[in-house]
Length: 329
Image 1 (cartoon, one colour):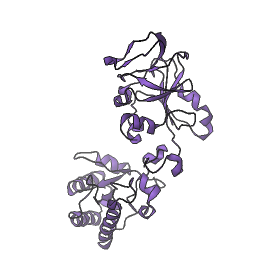
Image 2 (image 1 turned 30 degrees about the vertical axis):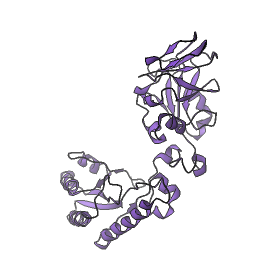
Image 3 (image 1 turned 45 degrees about the vertical axis):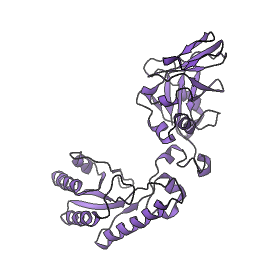
Image 4 (image 1 turned 180 degrees about the vertical axis):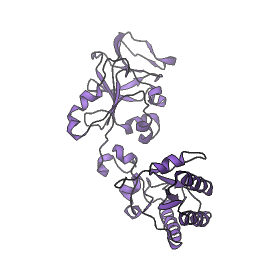
C-alpha cells in the first residue's frame, strides 16, 4: 500500500464503504449522498477514509457538476477537519480523447484546471490530480498532471484505431484467445450450417467445430464475418455463432481434431487481432477483449515464458472442464 494505491470509483448507496476504508482503498465521491455514507463508514471503521473527489468536466457521466462543486468541496473539507476523511485526489474523465483536436478536449482541460484550482484555493491538498485515460496518455501530454490511467493500452491495443495500429503507439497486444477444434468432418455441397442456415456450403468441403460461443463472450454480431486462424490460414465463421460453438469452413483442408483455432492475438503469427473482430462485429476492440467470460480458462505468461505461447493456447486440449478454450495474456 505504501507503493501503490487502488481507487474504487463507481458506487451506489449502501455500498461496502467500510470494507474499502479498512482495506485502505481510495474511494471516489461525486455527490453529497456519497460523502454522507463515507462519513458514516469512517466513524464505524474508526479511521479516516481516503477520498478522491470526481469532477464532471464535460463527459456527463459520473462526477460532480461545476455548479455543485463548491458545496461538495466545502462539505469534504468539513469532513476532513472532523478527521473522518482525507482528500487524496481530484480527478475527471475525458469524453473524446480518442479524437485529437476535438473541441471538448481543451474545454474539459480548462474546466478541470478551474475546478482543481477552486478546491486547492479552499485548502484541498490532494496527493494526485488526474484526467488522462489511454488515448490522452498517448496523445495529449498536457493532460498528464500527476498520473495517467491506462486502460485499453494495458492490453496493448490502440485506443484510437483511426490514428494508428498498436505499434504506432509503441504497443503490442498481449491477449490471445484460442480454442481446440472439437470436430472436423466432410460435408457435401448445399449443406446448411448452424441455426437458420444462413450459410450453405458452396460445394463439398470440410468443416471445423470451434467450441466457444456467445456465452463465452464471442459476439454473435460477428456471425458470418468473424475471422479465425486454423492451420495457418484465415477462416471465417460459417453461419451463426451459437451459445457455445461455431463452425468454420475449412475448404477441404483436414487439420486434426484438437488443432488450435486462434480467434485473435497480437498478429505476430498471422492470426486475426481484436481489432479485426471489432470490425467484424461492428464494435470496438475494448469490448472484444473485456467480454470474454469466466468459462474460458486464463493462462498467464511472463516474459520468460513467452516462447510457450503456442502451448499455453492449447492448455487443456481435449479436456471437459475447459472445453479446449483458453485466453492467454
